[in-house]
Length: 213
Ligand SMILES: Cc1cc2nc3c(=O)[nH]c(=O)nc-3n(C[C@H](O)[C@H](O)[C@H](O)COP(=O)(O)O)c2cc1C
Image 1 (spheres, rainbow, N blue to C red):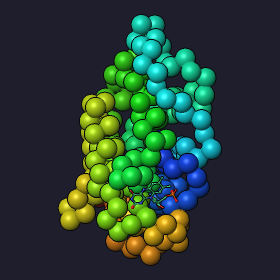
Image 2 (cartoon, rainbow, N blue to C red; image 1 turned 30 degrees about the vertical axis):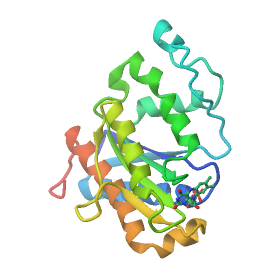
Image 3 (cartoon, rainbow, N blue to C red; image 1 turned 90 degrees about the horizontal axis):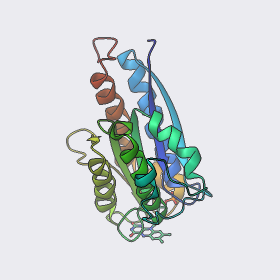
């Protein structure tokens, strides 16, 4: 139980609502999975609510100078966490059948991390979650955008269990946490994503501690 697995959750909503709730639930499930496998799991959540993450300007300074982005905003406090994380649970509210602009800006700003050293993210495990106000409001599209971000960075994508398809997908009815709770199947898919991220990350790192691993 010595070496801990560090799982980073990311909420891509500009407010404290459904998306943060789902990330927290996924991270709790991740910790439970760690206990079941005899693996110590540490979790942290980045919330983009009230944070300033500027657009990538494509100045290419990061590539020329082999450095993290020079823009002085909240991304500076996120870079070390992204580099340190061994697994990711990224969630977005569905905005216009896609991820939020906040999350897209956050993803774009990963460019220097990868170019500085691909192994900062390459080969790490990621799961995706999307929460929409409508039953079929574009959760699959938003999950797909997150999955493609992972693939762009050479990461390993995990979904929930078979039958739940490509990611955690929740119908919030625009009622934040209360709405999510009503979508029991959706919340089950969220928890499965948290569990699977730990299961696969731990196995890849040879951290399985008992027979349930
Ligand atoms: C600008 C904007 C666009 C939205 N577009 C969609 C959409 O395309 N499909 C959908 O189901 N819900 C859409 N919604 C509703 C949110 O996805 C939903 O309320 C979500 O649960 C918000 O998560 P939060 O509480 O974490 O902010 C939109 C909301 C906003 C503000």
